[in-house]
Length: 560
Image (tube, rainbow, N blue to C red; front, side, top):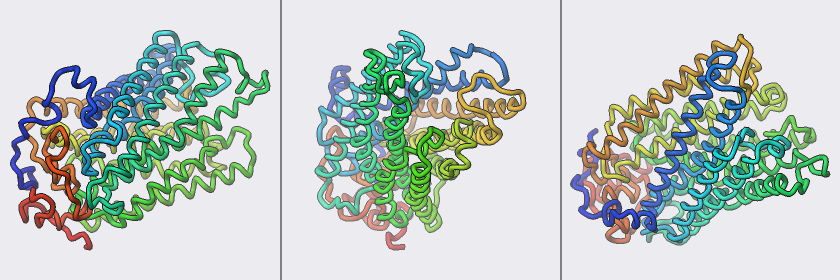
């Protein structure tokens, strides 16, 4: 179905919108418009993703065959450490909340901006300051600790670790302030009629994420500060020679970093809910269960950090309890998967580019979830700990989950962000290339790990060479797909056809009440919400502001 068929409004963009109302550099640098701040985050996290991705390609090329190929062991350690640090702290954690949360959340709520616009801008510049410290760490010396900074090694290696720990410390404040801003915005700035039961599921995902950001991020900040003081002043918190305990660092780190997994994945769940509802033309099956399961995941995420430490010497009872809670957290995730599949089963699916990314997410995240449950089994984890099985599991969750969902969301909201349509054929090709390349890269690593290949190793036994080679070939296909996405999205800004206000026939406020691109203040008039976010029947009959012609989209009754 073409864009023109799915919207009853003219495709002419408004003459003045948030992108062109003041084009000066100063207006962008000092803006308090949440949409512009979201775009500045988009540029920043995309740059971090590009650099981290290139580092990963070098690492995979080095591992293509045994022995030294293109870099020394020391350089290899620095490359995979910087890949992990930049990907986790500068890309994956802020990618969806800071980019799409900033752009879409107020539009979803019918608000003109976030609750604290100036604090929102400050959050962005704090993030940039953290990124600058990462660059300083690169210039000062080597950082070869991995993204986990485990003691006692991080306490004894290069002084560049001081700058890197401060980078994480500073960037953490951006995450905390963004989460606080979003919580207040959701509570206080909803449009008239926007009850909790009418919130889009993306908003529920951002809400649960924000709670985790506010409660968990201070822990990693304190941990990085303690490590900084340990190196600088020798206070002995993690040094056994001074009465400290290096395992304590792991407890602190994972108490944050496992909830941080849900900072990365909960907003991704929200995006997938939006995509599946819109492109299945059916309300989400079990809306309340899907919404509240996000809150349940956020709560349980604080209770499972010990499953990263089954071989660290913790008590058997502790390990059993953490193992049990690991199984329990699979329940609310399973609720989401079941309801998404049920929504598609009862709907009319359109295989657009965003929907292909959503379908890829279902397959890839399911593998990540199942392998996570396997690693929660004590006997299995002892065998697979610190092998490539863990590397593959982590990437199936983080990239197969968060990054794929972020790509789906970016394709979904791109016409709203810029008022331009990208090439749909190239979008579908890219989605397929990314899916094939990702599985070829990381499914082979599941096999490598089950055969005993340890992670973080510069060299390996010849018997692992074939699988490593195929993993590297897969990374090339994956990279080609991602560069194709970059090409056609940027191309659309200059040559793309003008987007209608609602090319997808969605029912949420950013599509039904805002132009593409949106007005500087989002809406000409404050919307009054009279139906749910997935009530396509009410929308097709002209509910809201009359943006839609009856019969212009396929409608499914909300109670079907």
